[in-house]
Image 1 (cartoon, rainbow, N blue to C red):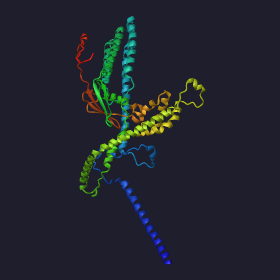
Image 2 (image 1 turned 60 degrees about the vertical axis):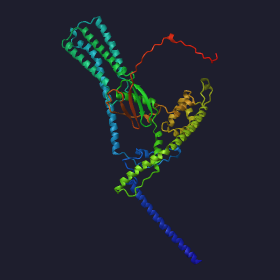
Image 3 (image 1 turned 90 degrees about the vertical axis):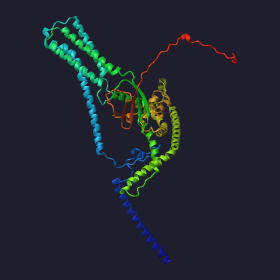
Length: 529
């Protein structure tokens, strides 16, 4: 018994010593592994590299995207800590460049407006100066102004008032956008007006100021002729700036580069930059809002097909033959992916069918939840408001009261259709209060969420692009031509615009005499009458 107990005690202590020894070894190994992993993370080394010359998916950003779960609100884990991201020198340079561009655009806009104001003051003060200078320089030599001369004063006053209103209505409208180049017709009109006024001043200085003309009625008629000429120049401005572009001459096809959404517009004789401005204005009203979440399905599907293909470089990165081997292996991966493409259409079919079934199911739940929520609201009439108890609510309070009953169904539907980033809880409650105030039905409330609307209906934070970039091979000040192509780029996508000239239509006339409409009833022998 003593021997057995001694042996068992020895085995117990020896086992503990061996166990503690193994534990210490595992601890040292884990510490070494941590130090190696830290070193490897600090050096940012990668074990398997895809050849950069031939990326498998065409875009490195595709591999970083993940499929978003429908229940991301319940399954998301927030990790806090020190951020590993920092601004690089390129980012600082880019931000500085954007600020300089914005300052440059503002300076150019204010400079153009200042020149327009100076030119306008010169135009309106010139006729008045023609009438006032003779009274200031040689008043004792002027002839008396008769009835006809005084009538010309009234004519000058009303013509200047009409010209002032016309110039304000045409040229001093709020600027819609900042164009990259000068508007050619407007610049030509400004130069024409400036040359015209300078020529009138030269003639006035040589023939009236130098000779000190005594015929004041002739001076007034000279000022009236200047005002009449300015009115005709304003009519020319209306023709060039407004009437010339009214007749459609080109059909423009606008395609969004990310999802292929296409619209067609008819425009008149416009320059490339003004046609681009018209396209952007139509885009915000006609195109559905750009939703990048809808584009991640095809990218994730392509990544899933290539996920099972692995390439291992066993020779190490220092071997000269490793680059050629990796190149051949990447081609083998692409060939294997092409062979697997034959069965990918079945996966696509079932994925789309499952998604449509899920959308229909959650849409039905949402419709039922909203209809039930609207049944709890009753609008009080004026005579009923006096007799109602103290729990009467306004539209916003009523919206906040019924919103929780439909919030979960609406949230699930928006997640399924990838619209959760387009609608915030505050915007939904505001829309609900608006519908309650205007006696709108549940169907009218749901229309904004069941079918995507135009871009302007959403919050400006989701769609407003700070700056568009016009890319064109032709000069942006030149007119549109048949086959012209230009791009409008923003941060997330670009609009590809193709112009086609509307063909000349030749119509002919064919006269039909009303008396020629004569008919005969044809009867056969076996026909029963």
